[in-house]
Length: 211
Image (cartoon, rainbow, N blue to C red; front, side, top):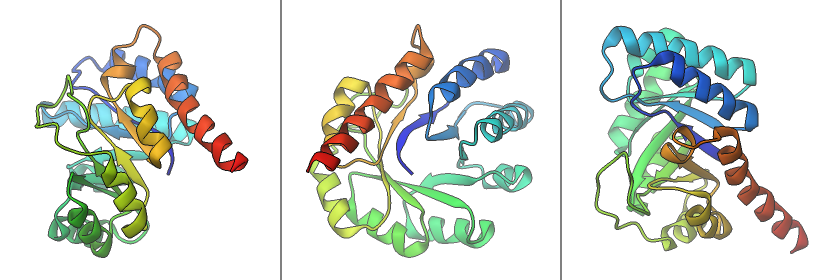
């Protein structure tokens, strides 16, 4: 798992959501997470079903935020949950061994260690920068990437106010994925925004080869 981890915004307009997502996926997204905190059940099913079809067409893993029942109903590729080991273990038991489970670990390395032991597929750290979507204390330090690379044998994802510019030092430090919402969905050219994120990983790969 590497590259841009695209997360959907709280848009009720399904046509608009699918249109922007299609442009982004065509430009090369690594993972798509459906996250709509305010959607009613019917809207959530409608949007998740349509997004999953897009992802399958583009061969991009489709992850659902929190709603394990919906992931089971659609046979989605995985679920993203909070980072407590109990919750991760419960989700793993429900989804089985073949699904992707992501765990939010904020700025806490121990949560990541525990999530790995409980069966997580990847861990997410942040927020690193102020977000236009989520309100939180910006307390996560970039050094947690070094610690995770040393102690957690899972891909890591960085979240929180990500733009290509401020994600660059985190990718250079070893972040495997960068999660973004606003930087893509509110961009004048979503495909160009995706390509700008992807360029960070291409540069990192070139540096690794040179080393």
